[in-house]
Every structure is written in structure tokens, then in C-alpha cells.
Amino acid sequence: MDNVRIPIKMLSRDAQIPHTAYNGDAGVDLRSVERIVLKPHERAMVATGLAIALPEGYAGFVLPRSGLAAKHGISIVNAPGLIDSNYRGELKVILLNTDPNDSFAIEIGDRIAQLIVMPIPTINFEQVEELTESQRGESGFGSSGIRN
Image (cartoon, rainbow, N blue to C red; front, side, top):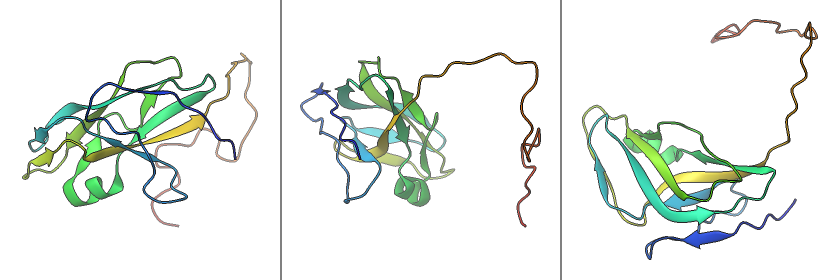
């Protein structure tokens, strides 16, 4: 497995270098550098205090944390959030409180999202008159059903 070097700049004294919680984890935890209270159905852009320089040929994907989603209804509006390799600004997470009744408090240092870095191939589209056939064809949007 490749070991990818990612330069990181700390933009806040409260920022923390992301790391995995357990060996073998795919995502590293992103943490908040600000205090915010999300009211029911409210969203907010939450700062991480970090900027990174992804190598060309890689992209970052910001994903919700399953525990926040299951226990508190906290998700990410644009999940997954995409970080392009040429972006050098602060990493921010657009959190959404889907709970209809309870507010959710975010404190400095709280884990708010996960970041996964993946290789991305260069894409070259080739215009054709016809596409090759497949078993699925044009079936989509629930065509496989819910149950077998």
C-alpha cells in the first residue's frame, strides 16, 4: 500500500492533525475549532482550522461520522464533500442537524467528520455513437427493488 505524504497547515491554535481512531481505519477524523449549536433542521459550516495540499492525482472526500448520524441525526449536507488536489483553503464541513426536536452542541476539538483520501484517475471522455450493452442497460432509480 502506498504511503501518501500530505502537507498540512494549521490555521488555528485549536486545530489538530487528523488521524485514525483505530489501526486499519480508512478515514481520519476532522475536528471542529469552533463552538456551534445546531438547532433542529439547522445547518452550519464548521471550521477545522486545517488546510492541506493533496498531491495531483488524489482527492479528499469528507464523510459523515456514523455515530453522530445514528445517535444525534448529524450529517453532512453535501456528503461526500469533495476536496480537489488544487484546493488550498481551509477545510470546512457543512453539518446538518436532522433531528426534529433536539439541538446539538459542537465544542472545540469535537470530531465532526471523516476525511478519506483516494487516488483519482485522469478521465478522457470519448464520444461514440453507441454504448456497449450491459445486463442492467438503462434500468435505474430503484430498478433492482428492495427485496429479492
